[in-house]
Length: 148
Image (cartoon, rainbow, N blue to C red; front, side):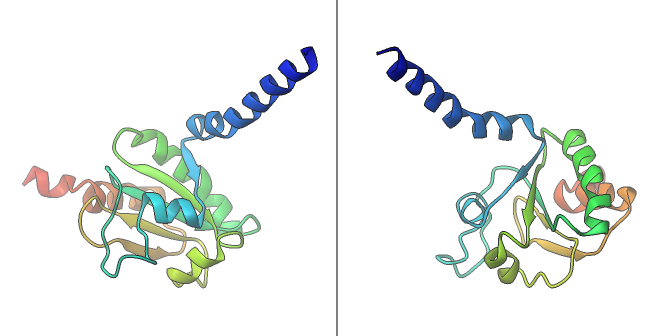
């Protein structure tokens, strides 16, 4: 009986662990299936229609890429700065090959900026932090337009 209870407790703890991990992380690692469920289901929809409730940023990377490694702490910092306004995701192009193919990711890093309404913008290469802030403020949050 005790073994059975501990087995159930352990199984419950292991089931909750991924949820706790993603809640603790500012930048969420996203799979192709999660992308289709949360962002846009390109297999069903013909025209772009973002499913999210706030803008998002998706960093397409690989673990061995030098510029990707330099971009990672910048994205982490941005996720903390904009935590209530923008969602941040990372997609490993070697694991999520279908998603990388859909967006034509042939070099990395590439970052997909998705506004709440309108078409997304895909940028290649490593941009300075100041430029990323400007893109988020002006393209995703439309702050420049709001000040006019």
